[in-house]
Image (cartoon, rainbow, N blue to C red; front, side, top):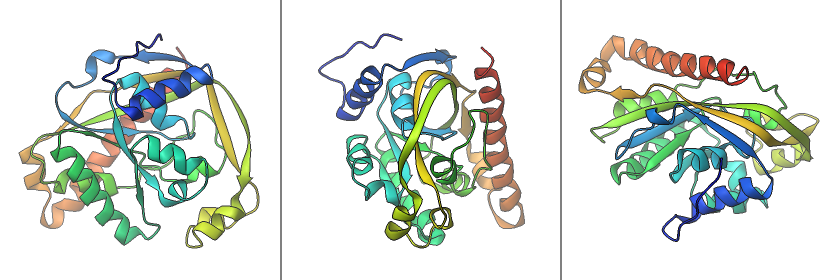
Amino acid sequence: MNFIFSGMVSNSLWFSRQLLSTVNTQVSLYHAERIPQHESVVVVSNHRSFMDPFVLMATLSTPIHFACHRYMARVPVLKEMVQHMGAFSLDSHSTRNHRVLFDQASKFLSEGQSVGIFPEGAKPMVKMTQPEHLGKFHRGFAHLLLRSPVPNITVLPVAIASREESSSPLFPLRMLHWVDPSEPAFDQEGWHPCVVYHKVNVLVGEPIRITNKRREEYSGRQAKEVVQKLSHHCQSQVGQLLKTGLQV
């Protein structure tokens, strides 16, 4: 993919394109016609590498505010990357996570900006996984979509399928334990991997509209079922796209 630079491109989008160009990452985008135009979009994707937010911004050609684990906003180098991409960090405590995610994401969406969420959480990032791996989606993002005061939200499932990559140890996981002692993934031996994509396919799924009907169903005893269905729908789409992306 050849990127055309413009003076009007935001800093985060410019930085994303620069990063991919610097490490010579070859990206192939599939189903670009599915990308919504002029809508409040929540991008939901799988997550294995620090490059994922930059790959998504560069290929979808739009700035995206990603929700990230708070350690990324505290560790040198990663902190600078978080600042460049306009991300917002989540607290390590799950109850506060939901509040921060709801408040920050709703603010950006109400302004017509895009938000990115990696529902698998931090685990696939800190523990080396294979390209075909897809962890279970946490459901906090589904609650956000159904509770947000923003009237028209479109969910865009996207899969990042790595066809060629390299990895190296970045820093000991124990170091992250000092940053966040409450995160179980950091209380173990080993190293945080640094996965660099050389060839990667990005596949866009069918947009999911959060309708008033779906929101009305999000109440009482059926609320849990509505959240489960929405989360499962997103995970199923990403999973199928990932499988396809590793074969093309």
